[in-house]
Length: 235
Image 1 (cartoon, rainbow, N blue to C red):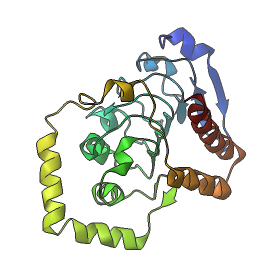
Image 2 (image 1 turned 180 degrees about the vertical axis):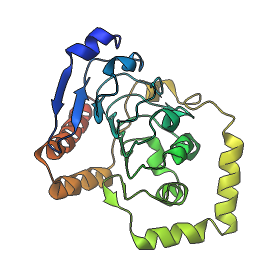
Image 3 (image 1 turned 120 degrees about the vertical axis):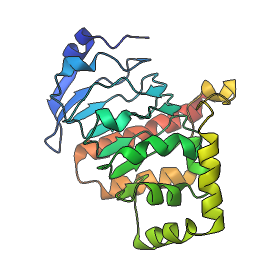
Image 4 (image 1 turned 60 degrees about the horizontal axis):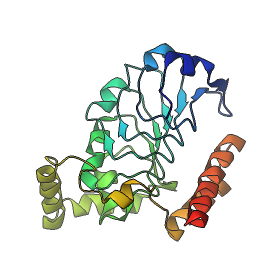
C-alpha cells in the first residue's frame, strides 16, 4: 500500500481532460486512506482515485472547485456524513465496483445539492428493493443513475411510493438502521472481493459507451468492463 502524501500528489498525472477540466490522477496506487489533499490547493475539477484500496469516503479538506470524483474499483463501505460540506460543488460521483451495502449508507449524499450523476454499479446496494426510486426521491436533482437517465415516469413513481405506507415504512426502517456501522456485517469473503456487476449492469455500461460524448469517457467505461472481466477470469 502507498500513502497519499503531498509528494505523491505532486508527482501524479495532472492534465486537462477531454472535457477541459483540470484533472488529478492518483489511480492504481492501492492507497488505503484519503489524506493530504490540501496539497492540491484546490486546483482541480476532477480527481481520479480508481483502483485503490479506499474503504471510507472521507478525509477531504474544503475543496470548492472539485465537481467530479472517480472511485471505481476500491473497497468503499462508508460515506462520511459531512462529505458534501467539504465538497459543496460536487456534481459527478462514480463509484462502480465497491462494497456499499444498504440504502442507509447513501444518505450522506442527500446533502450534495449539486449532485447530478451517480454511478454505483457493482455495489451490493444496487440490488436493494426500491434502490433507484429511493435515490430519485432523496436526491431529486439527479439526472443520471448508473449511466441511465432518470425518466419522468420514475420521478412520478418515486413520489407515489413515498406517499404510501410501504414508502414511509422504508424511510422509518432506514432511520432506525442508521445506528449501525456501515460494513460491520459484511462477510469476510465479501470484504476481500470487489462487488461484481450483473449482466444488466454491464449492459448499462455498454449503452453508456455508445452514448459517450468524449474519448476519455469511452476509455473509462471500457476500463470498467475490462476490469470486471479480468476479475471473473481469476475466479
